[in-house]
Image 1 (cartoon, rainbow, N blue to C red):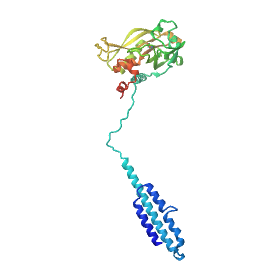
Image 2: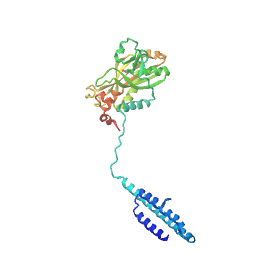
Image 3: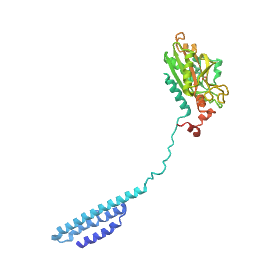
Image 4: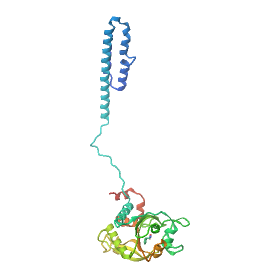
Length: 340
Ligand code: PHE
């Protein structure tokens, strides 16, 4: 038996040298330490040992078994370590390599300008209201003092969705919706998408407006101009001022076109202002008494002003964009120029 153990120990030691990976390790365990392995086989041979020698031989076998298990444990740790080292080697990170570039989005110029305008008016105490893009004829025209067959309907080329239902041509319908819900004092801003069948370098069939409405006691055209001065200065610089020119909108009386003194040349005349020193920026006026009446507000007690800003127009002026179409093509080379 002593001889057998010696042989087995030699074989085991020889095999150990060849164990490099997990498969070989498990084959080694199978061969020596499993239930049918050679070490367990020794115990089976105990039967052939004379009875009186059995305790001593049994002890020797047990010691050998413990030794063999110890060898296996050491071996498996060794294989584990080697596997880990190999993995670490394979997964080495070169921290000196340049990092991958992350592509990061930015806000669209229309959103930038819209946010900027909202910021200015929010600072003056305006609230924001958004009306529906599909609007009824009543809110888009009739109650804004543009009855059916009124020639002013031709001022805007309207997309009809159904009889009496339109894609709103202006955010002015928001005036009606707000005055129906709230009583003066009112100070509200209505931003949104509007639609007109019109398309050239400065007109797009879909564009954005921002309607402003103030209704209170003793509101006059002077209040409008004072507020618009503050607005254009916030947008174009502290040195600009406004000029009002008479105009016509059915829902305001008097109506005005508002010009800003040219922020590029200071009013001397340049290509941006086409030599005039002034640039048209928005339409406005004192809310027509009929519009107030249509919303149940007494024009003897209250008055108001309204203005409508074209957001694309402001963005084109501010950023020097010469074609409105660029803003809707989603060409990244264009859009990336507005990133912070
Ligand atoms: N709704 C007008 C337009 O789209 C602009 C405007 C708004 C004019 C409010 C006066 C008052 O042309």
